Image (cartoon, rainbow over all chains, first blue to last red; front, side, top):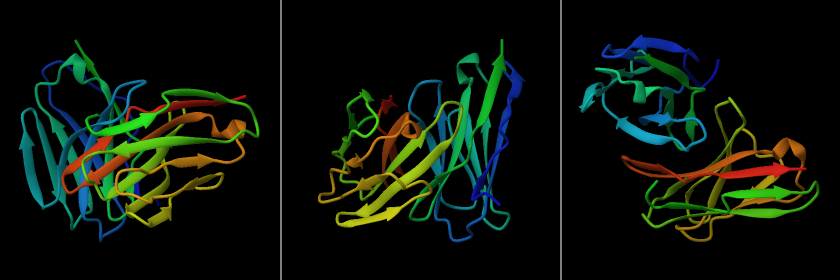
Length: 108
Length: 110
């Protein structure tokens, strides 16, 4: 079992829709969780971090964490074509371990 | 990518040559990481450090070495370059809720 698992996609949603990205992790002692966005040929950029169970909202983005189920998700509301990118889930204990990423395509 | 500086941005090496990829951060972050990313693939952890003087191997450490003599600097050393090390290399740093990547080094070994 991989330490951090994501569906590789592509996930295709129409413009204005909600995109839902999911991530599961295997290390129960993981402390912090991050969502990054990576455009082709660019370095990953942090969208948001979450530490506690529940939801955390930042603009159009909502991260959800469920430590009992070892599950973290990212919702993108009112998806825009500029949101088309690969979304990376990362889990921190000492090492910062990434999933393989989910490619999101937002159709105009 | 405020605060994490990687140099060089591009480099071509011949097989068997050595080089050091530099990574510097000015945010006083304790945790620093080196990753490689092959085309169309995810990020693979090479080495990481949780503070000055402390380093640990990641998923793919073979062929690389690191040191962390100061909080700011975390250089990655390739001793005998091989074609399999052709990749994009990223350095990252974290402190609490702050997490940043450098802009990457694109390395080609020929």
